[in-house]
Amino acid sequence: MATGLASPWWLAFFLAQAGDQAVSPEAFIGQELVKVRAAPETPARLGAESRLLFFAAEVAVDGQRKAALHQEGLTLADLALQLDPGEPSAMLWWAAHRGSQATPLDPFAAIRIAREVEQKLLGLKATHPDYDHSAADRALGRLYQVAPRGISVGSLQKAGEHLRAAVGRDPGFPGNALFYAQYLAAAKDCAGARDWALRVLQSPALAAHPLERTGWIAEARKLLAGLPGRCPREESWP
Image (tube, rainbow, N blue to C red; front, side, top):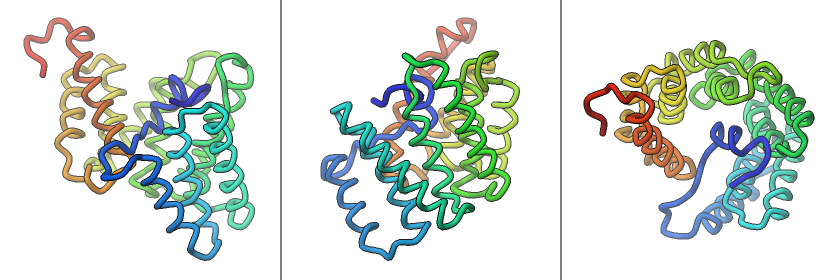
């Protein structure tokens, strides 16, 4: 698991595991990196490589290795943005890697990083609102939900606005459904949270996202398991 801004609240934003491949997650990601690196160097290719390095960092066991992979991914995203400041993949994965560099041991840095990530994602929303199934609104919604309020960028109201926008554009995308379910649970709409979590588990789109699906499924099941405690008056829960 990642540390700092990626844990506990930033990892929830980009939670992903490669768990059910025929090969190990590390080997699967390594194979994908070889494929991506064989293409000519373009901003989009650098963004794709940065994405894979994020997942490689998340499955890394050694803390130093994890940090090095996040730094490499951030450097690649930076390079892509130097070549094309509007490259959406670079903007998105810059935010992911940068977020991973915060630590609870330095809360002032974590607050600064949260604002940097917020600004990058707002830029992505302004220029590419539909990119990756409404990734900007999805990510902003989760960021605002789980970030500390008052001392940081956290706002449940803003979370709802962005997550409603994400599911409005693409309600069938499991990542949108999951983050919306988590928001609804936080807002004490447990019936709505249950409905959207079940949509995640029943989604035919899960198979198309091998790096993300294990994390999505685990988080949806965790949410459902916690609903009886959050909403004890409900008569029945899965």
